[in-house]
Image (cartoon, rainbow, N blue to C red):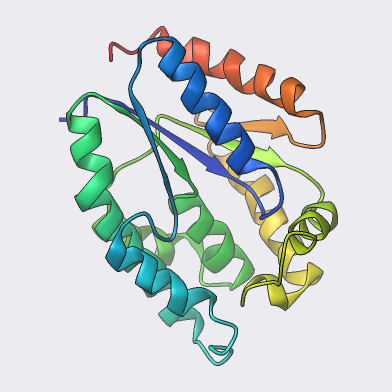
Length: 211
């Protein structure tokens, strides 16, 4: 049975997830809560290799079902090898993306539908659900410009703003579907203002957990 705390961050690339994840890890440490951070797709050797396949710009002919299954496969390895063992040891796990990313990228933006993505990922994750998810809400054009300033776009980013807008709309819909779990964070604010909001939600959550 899960004992630890599972926190996920969602949002487009360039929304500031990495900065806030590191701040939250340090904050939990200040409360004597051991936390690890992982990313999706990736986090372990097998999953990182799958990540390279997914994001490689040469793989432009990748079918949307193949894409969904590759994400699920990478996720299954990360869950079984890292996330569940850490949670069962009573640690906090902060994950940069999880199943919600597949819901919006493959379910919404690719048009596969939530049910199809959910059925596949229920197997991949052993039905693991985050205790809380922070959706970094920022205009997709702004987020993409931030990301492109940091380097060349990967295969998904190369699909342009129109695709990112579909992803963003998917996140908005998903946040309406799961309002108790998904907390929308205004990611256009300053770093400290953003973290103040994240910390507020985290403190509320910690009152219900014994880690």
